[in-house]
Length: 214
Length: 217
Image 1: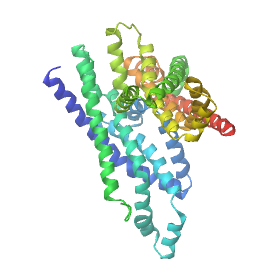
Image 2: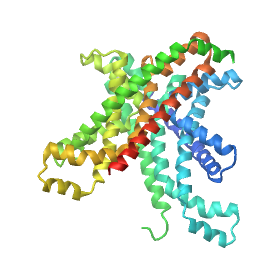
Image 3: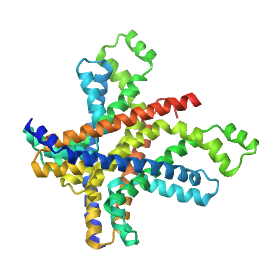
Image 4: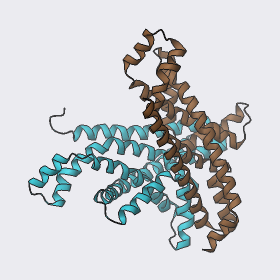
């Protein structure tokens, strides 16, 4: 393995990290929005969200990427591989995030909600000041573990031609006939990315720990 | 709607892919469950050596995406003198990869097992293999059922990655159908529907197994 090979895999890491981050930044709020739709039992939208979560949660990411990249042009929406990749990863992580947020909402303590009501907080304020901080804290571990799964599902977009860590490592392995060195280098890169997420989680947990919880 | 008619006409291709996916998933499930149980034993061992090796294996699998691991086996198995075709390479990759995740689930359930249960078993003279088989493993497996269900869905989803090493599974057949007749919408939608059905039936089976386990507890 030459230094250029290391460089090409590390360059793939850039794609892995940015695809993961973009889809997380889009997918976490989208999941929250859908969880709120579920929570408020908005008619029609509630059923649509249930169907979306159930189907996308069970759909392999590779298949979803193929569907979005090859099938959407048929109905007049054609996309570059990168946008199709981002859309795939966002839709798939949002489905899981919806369930995580919804679980936190369902378990939100009723007494805190009633207290907010009795203080005369309006709907918006109640959500922003009382509910959101609480559910963010309780959802964080599950959200981060979904993020690390998300990092590991990014290779799915290799099938529509995006070169990320896995695809770059496979290329090097196929060219040099020595699959082990690029594999180990890729494994190290993935571990570092996953570790970065876990460390960030710990830091955020410490920073936003409820007062008196130290 | 023409597209759907075309896919229906060539449904035998999709069905062959579906059959392959189901077979791969069943083999992957059975294999990874067995491997998971076997791996849990060194993970929970009080001796440092086996525990360390088990932990390194499980952690490495948990850091690597399935596709990368499948590719490693695809290239590495022949150079080890193991002449597997793509299909069996895919199955072996699914087993080795998901076996590590299963082991982690069982380890979690084992660690949560009340100490009294094991001590009571020992007090009745159970030791070694019999203690493991009769006292420890049944509650561990029962407790892990819901999480195992999630992992089974993961196996179904991982199996789609095998299209990239040219295993004739469901997604692969849909892709070849779409490249031959240009019916991307209908073929991929049909396949997504079949994956959904598969996972729904897994979920209901696991739910049923869980209720049975609740009764036994």
